[in-house]
Amino acid sequence: MKHLTLAALCLLASLFTISCKTQSGATNTNVSASKGSVKGNWIITDISFEGIPQHSKITVFDQASYSCFKGSQWVFPNNETNGSYTLTSTDDGCSTASQPIVWSIYKADGVENLQFKKIGGGVKAKNVTEGYRVEISSLDKTTMVWRAAVNYEGKTGYIIYTLQRS
Image 1 (cartoon, rainbow, N blue to C red):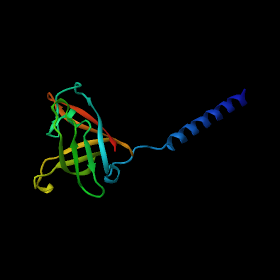
Image 2 (image 1 turned 60 degrees about the vertical axis):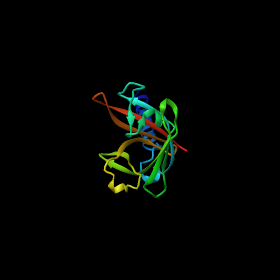
Image 3 (image 1 turned 180 degrees about the horizontal axis):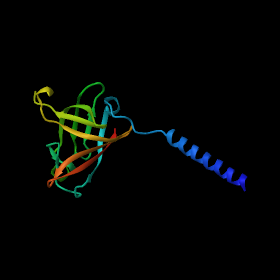
Image 4 (image 1 turned 120 degrees about the horizontal axis):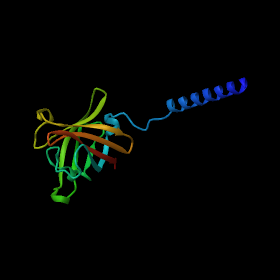
């Protein structure tokens, strides 16, 4: 009986060691948000909500309804801060438009954000005082997810943007 108890304890200890080793050796598919990992061309493929009713009428980035941004193309060039986004949807009264932006990665309190300012019309980025920040919830080589806080009927809700690298 003593040998059986000892064998069971050894087996249990071995299983515990293996399970801990597997977890610590697991690879993380997320990439830390940096200009290098964000650079490239992206398309917003999905938009969802947290704390906001589906199909609410919300204007985003002081430009258009959130639905107009589905299918929009975002360009974050190599080694530069200048980029752009292009609205391509004509559904639900959306108008196509192209907007130059200046972008960067902003980290605060362990949260990584993509921040950008709209530029154009001969105005230099340093003279633009307002901009936008979206939290980068996840990022890998092909998918990026943004979480943007919005005020809806006096409460904070979130718009979740899913982007695919194109």
